[in-house]
Length: 122
Length: 130
Image (cartoon, rainbow over all chains, first blue to last red; front, side, top):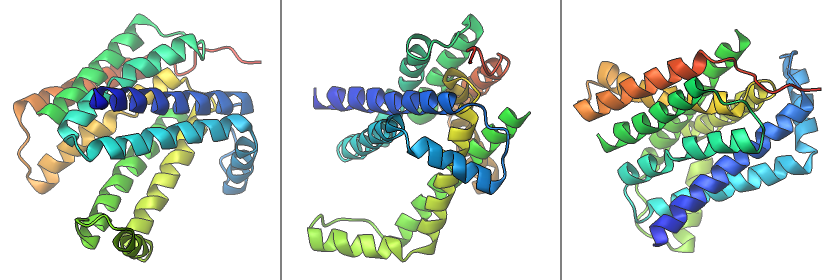
């Protein structure tokens, strides 16, 4: 029960965090200048938005929940279980970020998800 | 092209960062005592360990590359495509370190590669922006 709760928390907060960061970066717009100074200025703009901090907080919650879960579960269980993030993240991309996820992309996501589980269970 | 270049950076920096952090923590030694004083001492050791700093720098570069690519590419594209690290690490372990890779693990590596190829074949950006 405690394990299921933590797996859910890791999957939801880490994908939630990444979806939030994706939203922030899309609002900032496509980066075309990769000079170090331009990149720093762009990061400065990103960090001045509230969403950026919400995203980072969610990712931090996901990361610390992972550390806590690893204190009683094996990494060979934890990584395959959290591979569900690929499916949850893609659903978030579709329904929250309104991305067009084609059948081919869905198939790719599912293969990656099963593959990650196999690599760690193997 | 720049999408692929950044994906290569993402996979390289995240794998390298994790390997360096793991090496650094092994140099520090296993944590068996969870008292605040000892954890404080471990923290100080971590901050004075060069390998850990290299690991942290590598993960910061990973994070910046991730943010940059997300400024134009779909999250549902970047996330599975950057999973190729999961396939590359066992491959490197087999080739460079002579580690034994089980058949289930090889199957996993194959599935990840196939998945990444499928996702990479889709257009990176599907959302119209203003």
